[in-house]
Amino acid sequence: MRLCAFAVLLALLAVAGATPAQSPPAARPKTENLILVTLDGMRWQDVFTGADNRMMNKEQGGVADVRLLRQRFWRGEPDARRELLMPFLWQVIGKDGQLFGDPERNARAVVTNGKKFSYPGYSEMLCGKADERIASNDKFPNPNVNVLEFLAGKPAFHGRVAAFSGWDVHPFILNRERSGLFIEAAFEPVTVARSKERLADLQALLEQLPRYWEGFAFDVATFQRAREYFVCKQPRVIYLALGETDEWGHGRRYDCYLEMAHAADAMVRELWQLAQASDQYRGKTSLLITCDHGRGRSEKDWTDHGEKIEGAEEVWMAVLGPDTPPLGVRRDVAATQAMVAATVALLLGEDFRSAVPDAAPPLPGACAGH
Image (tube, rainbow, N blue to C red; front, side, top):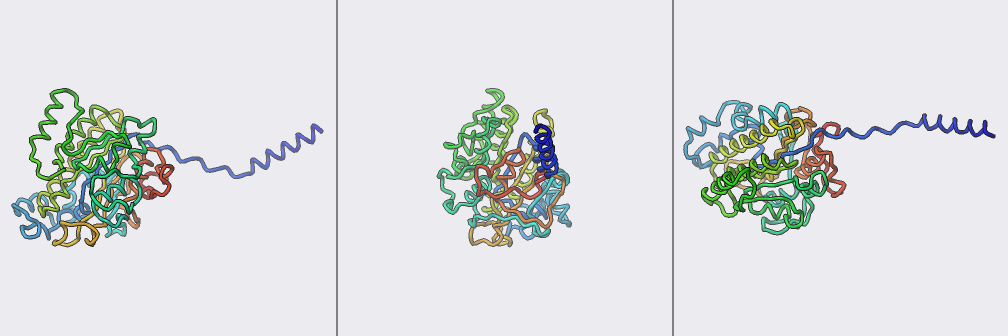
């Protein structure tokens, strides 16, 4: 009886050994921290081909000094123009990361909310899906869970997620009351600095700049408070929402629009360089840059966006970090704005769709192995 039982046991073991082994789980990403940046209303055309000659004039672009603007941002070749406009994006991300959204390479990226303006766009981007209930820029709490809130609910990220925006609607988009996220927006007081003197300087910067737009502060003030927080608190996730590109676009000031796109690129470079100088961040940080909507394609309607503006549904994304293969400008790949949320989570080793099953999947290939 013992010999029979032993034979049966050997047979069972043999059968088990013949069963195909399950695939090993995907390796956990190297990314431990993430910087998310949005450039409100930044057109893919200017990102991928640089300054647009059709608007480099007074009539269509409201340009104050045409000669100076052309000297600064015009070159004959698109590749030279785009690098001149956004040198960090093209010298670093374009070589070591990935860019989505170039229709010329069959890689169109679009919003799915159909509204083509800010609140619906930011909600789709951060919550992973479009919501028909969000049909205005009114200040009401977003009913959808966003990816920053999702991450902040994890023990490893609790108290280490922060958002900064020049627009006073962002606290509602991120539902500050429900999510408990650290958010400073528009003209809200600066609360974090390395010293009382530095805090006073940052507050003075915010107050001494003109309130040129209602409910929106200049990007330099938003960036400086975000930069200070980044240095002082060393968050694992920081979101910086810059918006002057959209404001100057609506004002038909193509010169100021280009200047702020160039300035935003420099701000992102500075954050990235700060990260590379820190043991906490170096080699363990990913960067994702995108926009909330596009703009019109022609020289007449480039200032606008919304349901009736053709082309305003077209957006773009740029990703850089230790888990992103250096594929440069992506070809033959479709993307949607809704993919940003799951991509942010995936790069940090988390599954946003476990909490929001109907959220869009991550950007294809933005994270190695996925």
